[in-house]
Image (cartoon, rainbow, N blue to C red; front, side, top):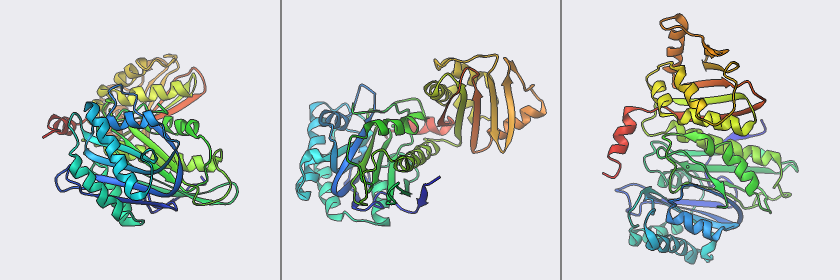
Length: 409
């Protein structure tokens, strides 16, 4: 792999600055971030497909900016289902960033996350934006504060960076931050997770890269699942400001390998940090009709609450996995389906149309031991083609219910 993982955050690429501040939406926590690029950045966006879209998403889809200079993000309040006032408030957030930086509002992206159905305290938000703009900086502190400011029920920062060497020899830096631990079942589409993610690079990009960005989404955020609920606020943004110089890298495989690495690292971090999650479930599907059907089958398995509960209880109930496969819409030949659990050890649960493990057998004990691990791989061979795909999810614990039963309190 040509990707070189480095220590760093969203300001690691040349020309990017960031800040995170406490504006008062949340009690004594960072809750507002600004990301800024000193030169215009080619942008690509992907948005939630939930029809009850939050006001910031409506504003972004309406304007569809192809270049950006900044992004403002608040946490603690989703600004969703807030009517015309929500739109006004999202626009006011952009203007509050644009004016002191000498930008046009359309050059500023906007995103929100948090409790749905409450108006933003705009006096606090605009004051926080003014503070954040003054504090824009590079380095570890700026990276961490920006990453923390976009978190809601997250328990850990999600921030990654890497170098890639492009085909003309230019070394480009790619970095990203994300938030997400609940209401996670993204199905984002470009130009038209709650996961918020922002990936920045100093690589030279000049054209429309929305097709490449969609491919990144379909192999990262769009194949994760925590609880099956798609947010009103999902957004993933890509910004390339060309500060590293060099030839245009729009179609350079090395660039997109690095972007995919960051996106997948952020995606898996979201799943591991799922509300109440204790285990990571990785489903790998092979032998599907095509790659799209393989991803659909894998995602159906990780989305199943019955599968999630079985994994939480370390119960090797293969029927739940196969039922989820059957509901995926993907083609398979049950006589050729093979279901395997893996984590260091490997055990086959189902093959050639019949169960392989017997209740109380040594193999069942091995299966239970695998399911007690923190990371479980589920391998599914469908027997109808050469398609392959993956999806990542987490278990469903008692703690998830506890967190979401009292979310607004």
